[in-house]
Image (cartoon, rainbow, N blue to C red; front, side, top):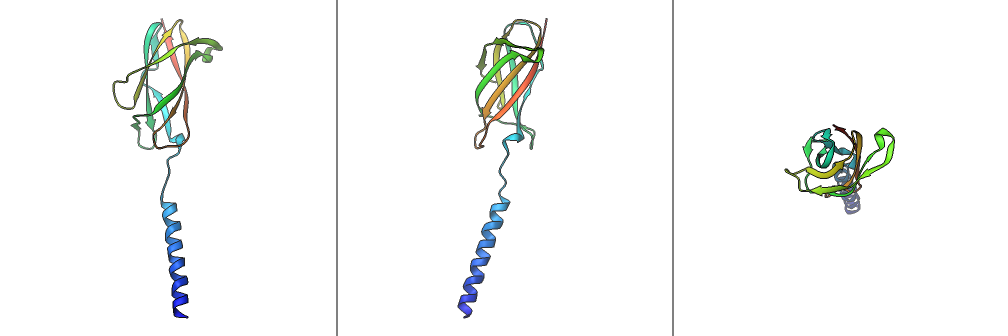
Length: 135
């Protein structure tokens, strides 16, 4: 009889330990990450460089080695979604900074849409950043 009670108690203790370990593990939420413009303005012209940082908002640190798979640059903020320009990735200057080369054919607000995967996280980081192109 004592061995049955001991066995039940041991099982209950192990189950409780397993459940509490599962609660202690906290997974990051993909919403904790966001892109931020390094410089919000550029000059109108060809082959301008736009730099963004991918930041973990919990630590305020830049996130290196993300895989950026979607980029689009258009004038959606000025109601000209059809005004699109090519975006070409170029090597960044520091970890967590991602740079792109693009031509800004006219002054106004341009929207840079980005999609990226963060190493070790599920889901996709998606941001739309507004860049001001000035003469």
